[in-house]
Image (cartoon, rainbow, N blue to C red; front, side, top):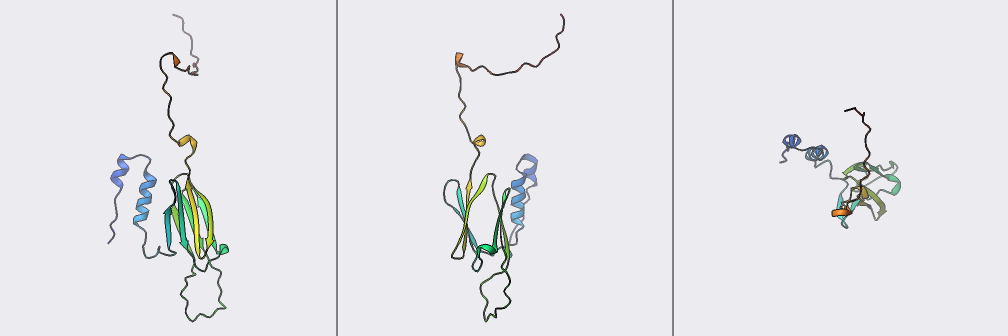
Length: 159
């Protein structure tokens, strides 16, 4: 049995985390039975590198679409209908699908490949230089650098 979490107390004391709470609420509402196909793995292949491997037997490169939007990776597949075949048993699921993956800020798709019925998508989390931690030099005594402070003009008043 699945319980629904209430994140409203966290909204009152947290600023800027609303997207995280919305993602957690959306994840708790997912239908586990309807979202199990196609099967996939998510691997961590390095400190900032990830790989998604999806089992897409029967789909070719022209049947698959990978869209990278801000904070979302959308993988969809649509097989062209082949009604001329007569199956005695049809066990390979070739129905269309759409799978969404939530991505953190600054996660980029590096490459995608299809081999032996497995779609592999490589991702990398690259933090821009401006957001990386940097060490601030501490000046001492007369080494204090002169700041480039601009004086705002003010009206001169006679004393």
